[in-house]
Figure 1 (spheres, rainbow, N blue to C red):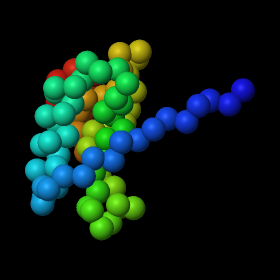
Figure 2: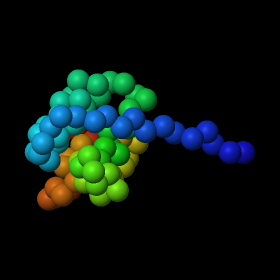
Figure 3: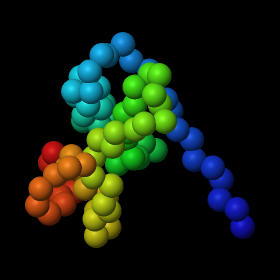
Length: 84
């Protein structure tokens, strides 16, 4: 049995810095986190002309049935499924 493909939405912005793009990703997760069809744990950012180079926003670790870690990708200490 073959699983249906998942789709990725590429959302270009007019932002000009990684910090601004990260802040937008955080705001989108905060406002749309209740939408179960969106996997914010897989969020990556890339420059418009270098889309093959991606910066992961959040840690990709999955918790014990409680979802993905909500901390930044380069966090210190243990993973957490709540907070930032």
